[in-house]
Length: 238
Length: 394
Ligand SMILES: Nc1ncnc2c1ncn2[C@@H]1O[C@H](COP(=O)(O)OP(=O)(O)OP(=O)(O)O)[C@@H](O)[C@H]1O
Ligand SMILES: [Mg+2]
Image 1 (cartoon, each protein chain N blue to C red):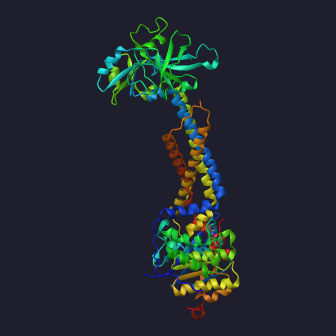
Image 2 (image 1 turned 90 degrees about the horizontal axis):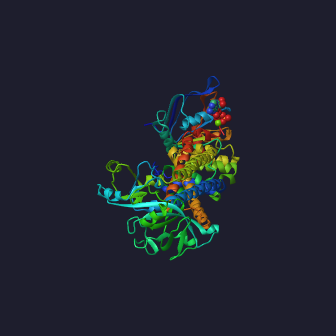
Image 3 (image 1 turned 120 degrees about the vertical axis):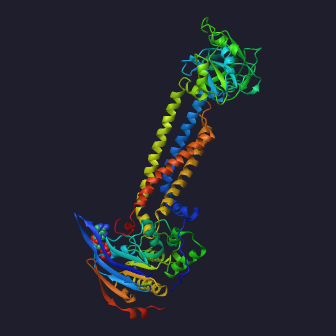
């Protein structure tokens, strides 16, 4: 069984007018457990589409996606939501919180979807939020949070179920430099210490130093730009 | 600032308890109280109307036929061609003996009914004329209702009668004698009974003999029938009415329920109330369904988010249905309280009668309607695309 995330020959067509456009064109990528991959590229090049397919949110028109050894293209919708719940932590382009849940419940809702919430789950969620600098906001609702606080809540939510794959779509877009570094460092640390496979889409050049590999997406095709394995390892305090 | 994620976190994928199911529903209810309060208000008004209408319907049909409904009879034997109506049926009481011989018939007793007007004293004032229904029965038969005050009928004193307690409200008391309008007969109240109204008016029970005197005062009005009665009430659970029709030509045996339907105006009156109730329930289903649907539509985005992070359709559907269930329960309970409150301040003469089991039945119907109408929203949720949550489509 191959762990991590494998994407092979994925093509995605979107219907446009009478014809179709290829948002992704035979994209292949393999992310090993413990590997942190960055994807950069111009707007509209297909990055979010790519991440949605990797995150079992969108079915590819062609090609295969394997998450933690499971081939997901053959799965039913119900099984896909199970994969999303158990295997994937998705940090979305805009934070997308549930309006009527406070910060703590936002994180715990993931546990509720899979069963009961134990005392340990709660303690863990609080610890996670505290480390993301949200210790004083546990009872706040999304409408009372800043953009950055919302984003950090979403990150805590993505990490709360201990997923094997972390997918982040511009997680630092609404954060200041200090927080941005902390958040990406946190993700990088998770990737290394818990051996998760992670892909981060970013526009922020400064965040690339935390990643092992940097890919570039252009007009739906993915190409390797740079490998800086050693540097990345050194930067992260393991 | 690093944290330690438990590596032993074993994700169980199973249904949570009630608390899990209600969690989302309750959180949302508490967070947007105003929005849900509005739905509750609409629902309470609908429920209130349903209960009031059912109480009125029940009250009217009780007024129309409680004497009939409370009789310990299972079947009614009418003259053939009488359309199950007392007023159109005339039989001889000699049939009583014959029908008692038939299989499955445990007991039989004759009955007659006539509408009349009681005159209070010699007064000519409007309010001193009271509409009554004179019900002729054999004293001591199973048709004689239980006395709540005074004594029962006796064959020796044919003009001693027992009457419904509502006559007390008209100023009559035990021992009073009253005249009948257009008749030389006068009747003396010796006992009171409860819940005895017939054709929307007070029932006055007299011995058969006295009833005949009043009803067939005009010569020849009995069509020469010996011992005339309107109908014969039968006891016996498994009576085969067609067998009786064959054995006793010129008669027609029906169930008591059919006989109630045959009362003048009963079907029409009951029918219109039932039709109103039916329409009201259908309209409620639409109104509630549309409300739930609109609310659900407003939440498309957040349902998408939850689907994106792994919520199954079942999880979200349960949240919606349990929310509707809670709202319905609150609304129905408030509606019931309001209804009983209304009943308490209603004027005495109003034909309004709440019955616990009717209230329960309509509560359950309303609950089912609400939950069913929310299923339209549930269907919509299952179709939501989790990608919507990625902020692309708003
Ligand atoms: N649902 C859709 N239907 C049709 N076309 C779509 C749909 N979603 C995306 N596209 C198109 O596919 C292409 C890739 O979109 P995508 O969102 O993946 O870009 P992106 O690289 O994430 O851009 P950005 O950096 O601006 O977020 C774009 O041309 C977009 O217009
Ligand atoms: Mg994008």
